[in-house]
Length: 176
Image 1 (tube, one colour):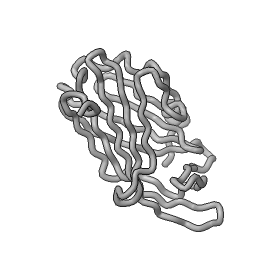
Image 2 (tube, rainbow, N blue to C red):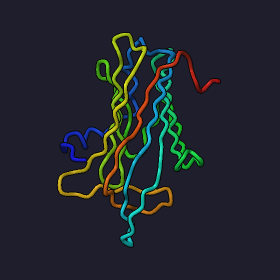
Image 3 (spheres, rainbow, N blue to C red):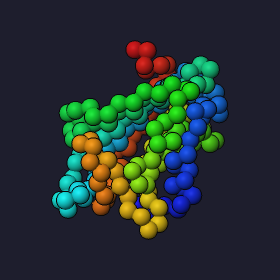
Image 4 (cartoon, rainbow, N blue to C red):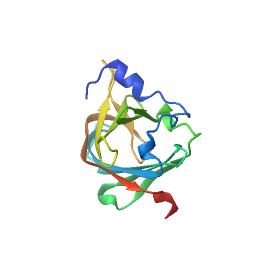
């Protein structure tokens, strides 16, 4: 879970104008990503819990290169949606996160209570397939903390992304 302070700083910095550099090969396409989160969390009363959680993130790159984003969190087994956010191209992400294109990669970040999540999508040369890597990081000397779906702040004992997947689909999946 260690990452350099520079990585953490990048992960929580974002702007509303993050879509300007979307590769033309991704115009009018949807990027669909998902992963589970395996975690052990320490509650304020000292109990250790292992809540199951998964996240699906969908980004549509419009024919003008603008990004539309939906992120949905699901409780264990996907039985309950616990969080959904929708953002248009001019809306900043919560915690200062957002997506940036860098060559054949798309990188996004999101601040936790203490620490951050960084998602990296690597595209093949034709931008027809992709691979997702998700990492969780903390600042040197500080505990990684997150807020549970119950609103309680937990200290992270361990947290990792499991079964990350990424695919690219023609068109706007939000229009269907």
